[in-house]
Amino acid sequence: MTDPLASPPGRLLTLSVLMLSALTIMANATISPSLPALTAHYADVPGIGTLAGLLLTLPSAAIVLSAGLMGWLADRIDRQAMLLTVGGLYALGGTSGLWVDGLGAMLAGRLVLGVGVAGTMILATTWAADLWQGPARERYLGRQGAAISVGGIVVMLLGGLLASLHWRGAFATYLLVVPVTALALRTLAPHARARRDRPRAVGGTGAVVPWKVFAFVGPLSFLFMTVFYVMPTRLPFLLGELGVRSPAAMGGIMAIMTVTSIPGALSYGRIRRHLGFMAIFALGWGVMALGMGIVALAGNAWVAALGVAVMGAGMGPSMPNYTTYWMATVPPQLRGRASGMLTTAFFAGQFASPLLTAPLVGPLGLQGTFAALAAAEAALAAGLVVLAVREARGAALA
Image 1 (cartoon, rainbow, N blue to C red):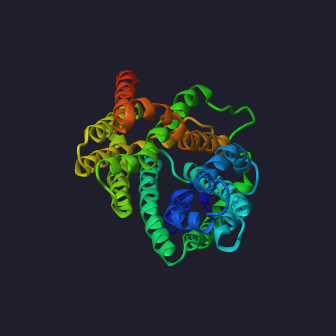
Image 2: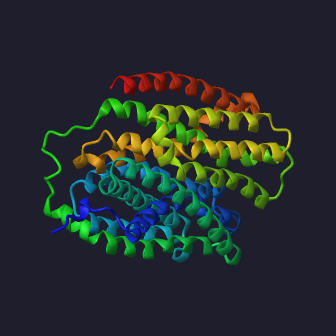
Image 3: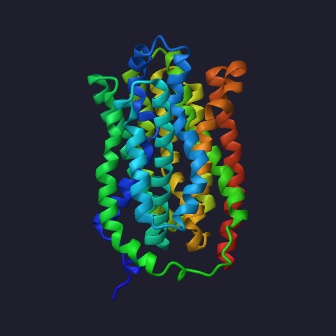
């Protein structure tokens, strides 16, 4: 009998895992268009400005706190049962804004959403590592990065459309998890049964996490997401200084980064055939530094938009490179835990980004902050070039 885990995944299975991955993009920004009307609705609540902001950031905090546990569970329990549970938490917490009245209950719902997002993201990454190997995994993870980008565009447009009908409408976007989870449960069922039938076949009990590798890729992932989230948290204010007043125009400029990241993500498998991991890291950070520098020097919105586009081009092949590099070193029986560790690093950077950049904005101003970050990115890229040269020499001698 053919082992499903050893067979190349079909199109429907690939689509279901890609869609499961794309769900992670909905954690925070989906309800952004609802915030002005939501704030007005709860105007009599003390500290509503801060509480409204927490509606965006609490899912990230919950992901950071729960990702480790979710990764541990993905290695030890039935993944179908886990997917059903986290999909339910995702739907319950995500749609809480549709059916709860109290702001406190809504905030609690955002925490529940974060736990659901952590579970779906870790399961998607773990299944990707199990089902695709070698160059096939690199091609898949490039598609995954593109799917996440496309998903971000879709949910932002859908959230804005539903929010225009009623401020609660954007919360309905989270119902997308229901058909996606149902499809994943159906297509993954044979693979989950095969995994249950041989739970210890992939290795012995002495497997260990490659901590030295994570000591490099973990902090680098944290910094990557910290820089990434400078754009949605600081760029709108800089655009305001440059004369952009329309929220739609600001959203359009920020969406450029997502659009320009797609070609690089889709090309990741081909890029890996010619460049090593360190070279891709160095190239990504170098291009991102250039984009950030263009934004820092921008005298108008058009130049700023160019910088945003360059940033996206650098981020496109970078994102799948982190997962591919890390998963290539992890024993199969520890992939869930490894996925949880990388997820924690990414979302910790996302959560910390506004906190880490705030001390720069006061003394340097917004453009000075972007310039300082560009210089730091360029320095990091230079260091990665040194590692890339060593990696290339090592490959040549092998």
